[in-house]
Length: 181
Length: 344
Image (cartoon, rainbow over all chains, first blue to last red; front, side, top):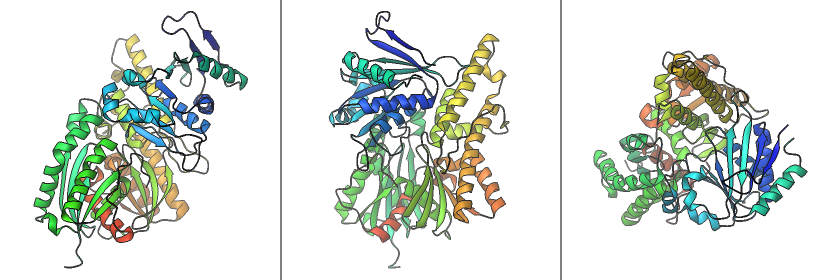
């Protein structure tokens, strides 16, 4: 069982942060699928969490939710993997890994910011490294390990400072579809 | 001699700036590589902006050197072949722009080459007798593909990674255990003589697919490392006192090599292919070479792998692939652009 906590009052950092626990990478992908279904053109998601946290697994689910059927590989090497809608999908997915981009400036220098307004969904792994380049309406997701005796469990922390109502919508759908169970 | 076609190859998709001259796709007249690996080591990986700048500085001297060493002039060249993807767009554009400029100025045809096709073609340089069809395992920092090469420049990808590439799995763990970048060669060296069963690691296989997945293996190894670090902290020692770095690296490497070998052999069995080749940076890994050699011998397969200098990124392989692409599909347009996620 996963717990769903609404922490609307007791986090100093963000007034609307939502936590839940994933028990497996399958559950993580399922959650990604929901995020993909609810995504709108030009949305940006910043994903943070250590190596092996499940950032790419979540993105695979997101791609599925967008109706994209291609492979979702880790973009660590190429910085960006573009998933176009040539074969399938209702909007493109721009899957970034900012690990090797030193800062926001490097993101701009690479011309990567142009993708943010191209009508697709942008997912940026290690988004915190280029925090200054992220738009105001970014959805922030942090994935953390909980306990090393539970190697598959992950704590998800979500905040959407520019759009708290959309985070509430995600949470409602999450409960409707019983993804947490 | 009129049949002898000289191809100038240019490669700049990642951290190597390279140029080479190859005759008829088989004979290397020159093969120049300027590597940035030493530079990127301090950052734990390739930094895209720095990579582009360093490519700009290196590209023209490298091309000059390649022509000089081959004892030819640009006017002697029959075509310019260049990698246009996959890779870092900023890095690719440096080689591509140089190639276009040279082709335009000299009136020679331009041939765009897919980087993985280049890695496969490295085997045409290594083995003069090799001809398609054959099965190729392409393993590098960015790819883990099983490819049927039906004919020159005719590929069918039958399996690929669903998450991390094999080389990436090496890089990430290498960083976690403090060995640094590039992870593959450093881990290979650290693993020499180590136990391959120091701790359990999962192998991922799929039903009805030979696709690879290294993410679960990577995460399990990271979990193991974390447990060791916690235990070491309690007992006030280093985690390497519990499992040596040598055993840790050997166990991890063995699991990756095991998956690569078993899927390749299964593909060879299923397709009844007797000719097997390895390609890409990870094919330089000594454990993989050993494992593939043994498994191939068991099954009576003939195995080729390139010499170490042709496993990693180079332009001779691009010139070779370019020769066959040119023969088969003609030249590329001057509007050829860099494509980050170009498929084979």
